[in-house]
Image (cartoon, rainbow, N blue to C red):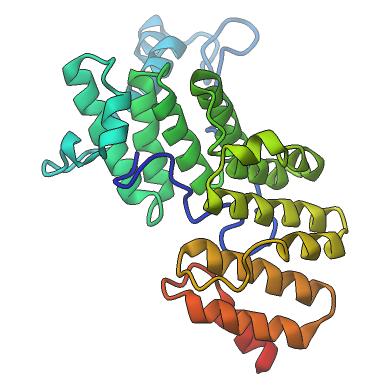
Length: 290
């Protein structure tokens, strides 16, 4: 989906801070069927047949909704399938050429918009899914964009589908974070296994630890959360995004435990490596030191 390699962790599980994400129901309005009596919704006794004929039938409405998802948002003419990274293009090789090209362009748009406009990014991913729902890469993209848009139940479903198709565990941190967002911290903790960790790179393992620490705090186990974060590379000299998120989670946990001075120190250490402002550490410091 992205130009570096899929799957990407959109801003990372925990979103840079360790507050529990606020999940919200996904999906649109409920389907409108016929009321009792067999009359179309809004119909009136004695209405003319001509009036009834002019009302859209339910199946026509559903077809219109499905068509809108299939079409997806517009794609600028200068966006090419070649903008998708090599790994992702390889995952689309089993599709017919024209279909693969259209899907790839939607995935490129999803990758470009996932941080600035996650809702539209998700619509692009859904358009790709409508065309090739049995492709693991596309289900990953649907999961990532749903996660970025705060549609946590939908994201979890998409990640599970992708895992069934390709057996990968790369998105385990996001899956665990979805469980947290849905108010199920115990289920989030179940993702912290040696098998899952063995399939994550160093960054992925840190992301998982951040989510696990958050789940511990959800359960009132702040000390356990702190100890877990201390097993990671808090003093790393790297400027990778996970360093800022790890330090932020650590500072926030210290504050939760009433260790204010230490928390302030670590929020300063977050600012030192957070040049892209992935966290709100500067705002937190202003509030603590103001």
